[in-house]
Image (cartoon, rainbow, N blue to C red; front, side, top):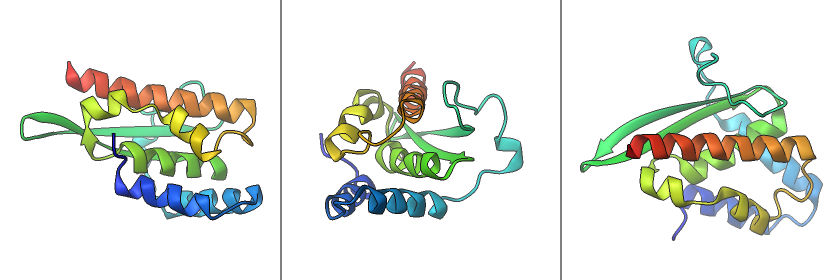
Length: 142
């Protein structure tokens, strides 16, 4: 399955960065570019359980041509995690729910080498975010 262009752009940029410090800086920049959620959106319903840092994900369903699609927005209070949120949004947002449910972000993150330098807690949080997003997609499919 072809990945969305925003995600592919991130993957291409990461391929040029050999040093892990440069990759961290790039993730931080991606996270800083995300729009902030509204205060009311940072609530218990949008909070991702299983993350040590605070993470909120908002799913916005849309039926395009009778097929459920989802747009995601998100935010974290931790800079690196905010960058991981940005990468996940690039991968999953504005896609058909069926594609989202089938896309294994963890395998893609491993291919990009994005998990090898994450702490166990951040890696577990990443899995929790992916599970939340894919769960939203399965729910949209009914």
